[in-house]
Length: 177
Length: 177
DNA sequence: ACGTCATTTGACCTTCTTTGACTTTCTGCG
DNA sequence: CGCAGAAAGTCAAAGAAGGTCAAATGACGT
Image (tube, rainbow over all chains, first blue to last red; front, side, top):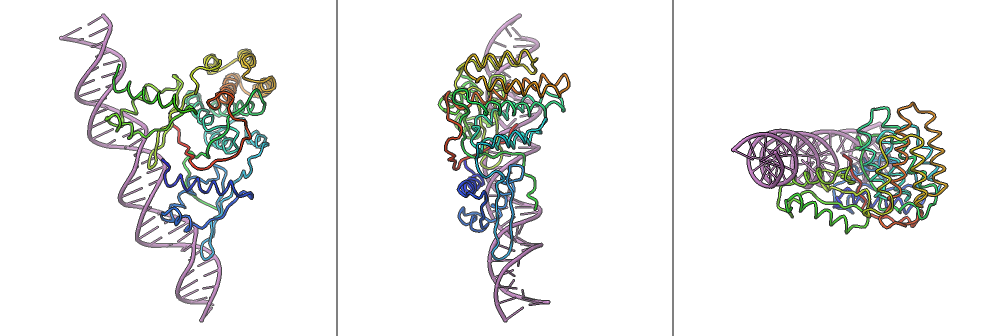
C-alpha cells in the first residue's frame, strides 16, 4: 500500500494544507531526492494527481532557479464551500464532473471517504441502467440530495472526512499551460 | 459449507465487521496467497457475493500499489430504518412517493424539518423543468443522495462537520468499475 | 445416470507505476 | 551573442497489479 506516487501526492497535499496562500512551490529534483526516485516520477505524480479536473493547476519554469508551483483552486476548507458546490451543480453532470464534486466535498471535510465512495458506486450502478440523457440528471440529483443533507443539522450531520483522495478520470497527458 | 468461496467470503466479512468505517482494502494476490488459490478466485468471490444488490460495492485499482476496496452500504448492519428506506427506493419516484419517504425520514429523526423542506422545494423546482420520464428518476436520485449522506460514518452520531482538517497521508482513491 | 448450476483454474489482457535515456528551456557569464 | 550548466519535460520500455473468459471439475436435484 502506499505506492511511491501516493506518498508523494500525500506530501504535496500536506504542504498545500499547511500553506495559507493555497499554493506551494517545489523543486522537482529536491522532491525526487527526498523520495529517492527519479525526477520524472514527480512529473508523473503531478500529471496524474494534480490535474485541473481535480481542482489543481501546475505551473513551472525550467532552467536555473526553476520551480514547480502547484495551485489549489479551493484553498481554504470553508463552510461556504457548500455554496460553491451548489453553483458548480448544473442540471446534468458527467461522471467526471460528479467525481470532481465528490472529491471536492471530501477535501473540504464535508463528506467522508465512505460517503463519497458509496455515492460514486451507486451512481455507477444506476447510470448503467439509464439512457444517456438521464444518467446526467441522475448524477446531478444525487449530488443535490447529498448537499441538502449537508445543509441542515438533523442531529449530528455528516461524518468527517478522512484523507485526501484521488481517483481517476485518468489524467490525460499532463499538458499544459 | 466450507467451500473456498465461502471461506474467503467469511474472511472478508470479518474484516468488514472489524473495520469501523465500513470498508476494507485488500490485495488480490495476498488473499489468493493466504487461501492458496489463484487470484481470479478472489475476483469470483467478489462478483458473486459482494454485489450491489446485497449492499456492497467494490472498487479497485490495477498496477503498482493496486488494491481492491470493498464498501458496505450500511456500515452498521441494519441500524435505523435506512435499510428500509433503500428498499422503498426504486429507480423512479412520483412526487407522492418521494414525499412519503421524506416524511418517513423525518419521523425517524434521520432528517430535520429543514432538510426535508429544502429537499421538497428543490425537487419541485427541478421536476418542473424535466420531461416526464426524467422527473421520477431525479426524485429517486435525490433521495439516494440523501440516504448516502445519512449512512455517513460508522458510529451513528459521527463526527461533526467542520471538525479539524487534519489529514495527512494515506489517501488512496480509486477507480471505479 | 443426466443435466444444471456453482466453483476452480489458468492462459491472456488492460491499466497504473517506476525508471531512464534524451530533449527543451532558462539563467549567467564571457 | 554564444556557451555552459541547471532545471524541468518527454517518451517509451519494464514491472506490478488486477480483470476476463472459458474450460475443467464438483455438487445436487430429478
